[in-house]
Picture 1 (cartoon, rainbow, N blue to C red):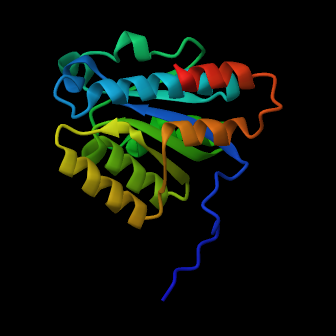
Picture 2 (cartoon, rainbow, N blue to C red; picture 1 turned 90 degrees about the vertical axis):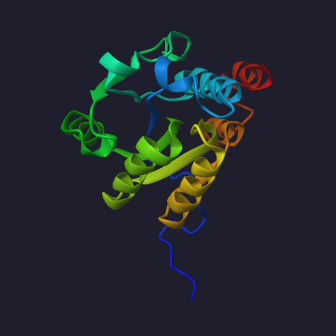
Length: 189
């Protein structure tokens, strides 16, 4: 029997978006599978997002022990940094209050590790009624299998799977936008 989805097109709804960059920290990234590609894609996502949208959130898991966010992946524009001990960002009161105040409904998620903090955040956010878009080539784990199984589990729970380039073009919407040339340059870099 087919599930009846409210948003059956699985297209990003035209509500308020936020980009969640989860735990891209110095000590965690070292052992991550395919880390150079992941860093490159997160950087593209941040650069394009800052041109097209607002509402960027960065989480740091136990920064005293695991280090801060990699400097090259800190947005240049305004963003909200949230330090946490809980694996799920969705259990942090400061985060929930902020997204409620900004009337955010869509969460675009990237970072590390897919099978721990990302998966727990995504599952909790889906449970709370958010539309969650997971950027598969802008997230990873130490082990490729953990990453792949976590992606499957999040999709089965209702998350929408996409890639860096795809979500950037979806946020851009049209080549007529004055920012399009800048966006194209980011994609091609």
